[in-house]
Image 1 (spheres, protein in one colour):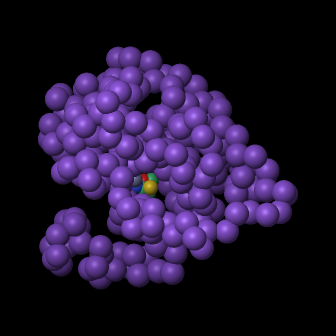
Image 2 (cartoon, rainbow, N blue to C red; image 1 turned 30 degrees about the vertical axis):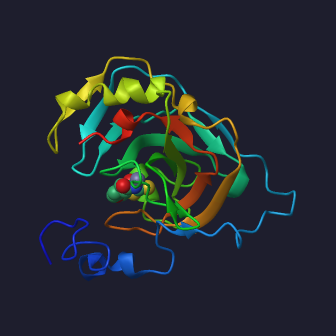
Length: 229
Ligand SMILES: COc1ccc(C[C@H]2SC(=S)NC2=O)c(OC)c1
Ligand SMILES: [Zn+2]
């Protein structure tokens, strides 16, 4: 297998399991969300999902080679309730997946439909684990909020603060600081309905450590904001 994993026929998801055993597991992400078989949680015991974020400036943005990633460890942030039981999860980073055209790019699909892109807000279980790296080794270690991008006419101001820095980090491994204040709350759609399932990291090492929370309502961005190459 090629030294570097990727998305080509010789190093893509179908062969990841050769180097990353967990990629062959039973709870691998992403998945196609079949809305007809998704069951609404009838028991009212599932508490409301709540989140609280800080606004931060000078966050570091990195070109990962597969997209951009903003490192945003926020000791003051909290994600809890919903499918997360009694544990509190803390924001670690957020990053984006997009495609060559606005017809593709999201990792999850809904009834076979891909969105133009998908934002992942990655949190780790600070109630049970001492570090992000440790949490990523456990089935309830991470909670990732997935937000779909739809392409429309209005640009998203918060996303603009991020994509406006991409010209400075054209190559894998490059990073820069985002001068603007970023409030992760603004990335979330107004409708807070979501699908949730137990899954994994969507790229190698594909650890089966993620409680997925995928919002039903996409946020709107412009073509330029999500087909950046
Ligand atoms: C602990 O090692 C890793 C490796 C890769 C990713 C990024 C993947 S996982 C995801 S969700 N989306 C992605 O692109 C991680 O993200 C938390 C963590
Ligand atoms: Zn991701």
